[in-house]
Length: 180
Image (cartoon, rainbow, N blue to C red; front, side, top):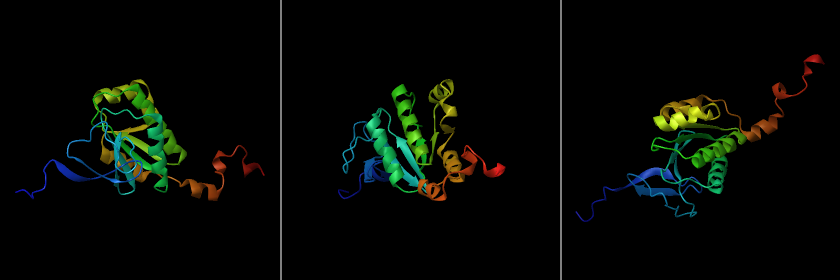
C-alpha cells in the first residue's frame, strides 16, 4: 500500500485569501504561522466560494495585522462585483480585541465596495462579546453559514461601477426635485 493516498492530507476547496492559489492543507487545520506558497502572505484565514458568496474560514491562533486584512479586502474587491462575504468564526472559543478590530476593518472595506459582510458560527462567549460591545449592530451576525449565505444572496447589492454610471442616488440628494 505504498501508493495509497495519505488520509491526513486532503485537497480542500480552499484558496489563499490574497492571491487565490489553491491550498492543500492538513485535514484538521493549517498551522497559525502558515504562509501561502504563492504570495508568501501569512494565512489568517482560508477562502472558499459557494455560489457568488466568498466564505473566509478563520484560522484560530493567528491575529492578522492591519496590512494583512487590507490585502484580503483588496483581493475580495478584485474578484469583481460587490463582495458578498461570510466570515466563519466557529473555531473560536475566545476573540481578542485586535481581531475584533480586524473584522471591523474588513467590514468597512466591504461596505466601501458596496458589498456586505456577515459573521457566523460564533460560540456563546464570542457572541456575548459582540452583543456587549454592540458590534452586532454594526456587523450582521448569523447563527450558521447557511443562514449567512442566504442573507447575502437575498441582499440587493449594487456594483460600485454600476452605481457611478447611474449617477447619484436622488433619495440621498440634499435637494429634491419634487419642489421644482
